[in-house]
Image 1 (spheres, rainbow, N blue to C red):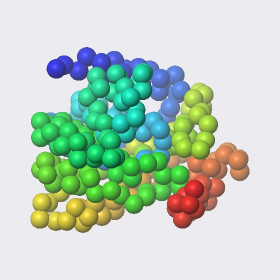
Image 2: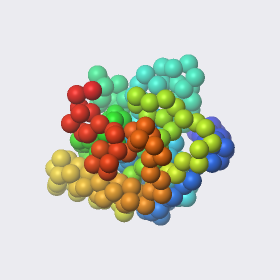
Image 3: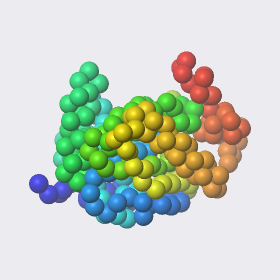
Length: 239
């Protein structure tokens, strides 16, 4: 079945990015394979991260099938869109169904997008990772492609109002070299290697980010360890 809806949605997203005058700094997109299955793995700091993760795969002309919570598929507007774009619903009470769906997609040569933190990180640092991405890569015998996003939290994130004004926000995207998920290695071991690499990519994106908080009130989007007023990871766990 042809992807009739996905390309127009991508076009609409790009037009919106232009309207917002987002300033993109994207590096490493050559690491997304141009063919064959792969698990594209990103950190999660914004409600819009799937848009930016998918953008990183466009130079390779790949369409990413994201794993997303099942409630999104029940919505009268987003549900038909998600199904038409062949995204993968995740019912946490029956996670094995989503796993098999994702595994089938990978084996058929698709790129599957996964946020291993499962939820947005209010501290804007990496949370603990679930092992699902590593297990999928091992079982499907495909690589993990790590990436990091930075700046997307300024548009719309948990606990803060949306800011869709023409603010010229910079958005940093870094994609790393594929990681082979060896079948003889534990899923936890693969996950630890993946997280370490994503931490490096995140720090690279943060160092290159050309903006700092404009006022003390604007420091909410910067992690505490970088001098911002976002909650520390310990504080975020209690929220």
